[in-house]
Length: 205
Image (tube, rainbow, N blue to C red; front, side, top):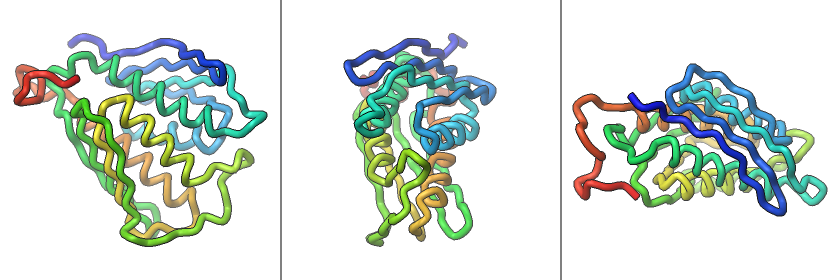
């Protein structure tokens, strides 16, 4: 099988980010985004997805806030997976996983369809997150920006449902990132029965 890997640096006026990815990895991880909470979440994502992942933020406009860096990591990670997967020949294309953490359960469904979209469902429950996580003050809205950027750049439908979300942002998001890793692992695995691109159209953009 052709190696499904990516290695490159993305530079903007606001950020400079290096990513090295092996979709068919052995859980080797080196994450340093400058955002401690995001580092932890990406570490979980790569571990449970069995991906080799290195994400190094060489420059970020942290003197303003973490918004651009957080979103740009999502953008570039989505691009990395899109490039590494190539024409997507033989992949399962979709996958789903559920992961609990104490009383919270995250359900994540993905479809690498070429049409990026993101939906977060808290089952109509309005949850206040009074305590942002870590010294960088990571908020739920930052996670939503990350997921949306990741999904749209990869060309993936990403639907997340969280049962019994609570004000502890860590406990709410940790099972989400674990489930995302597991679901994406399933979606990117090769099905030996699939001889071509997994679309009746014959192409996934």
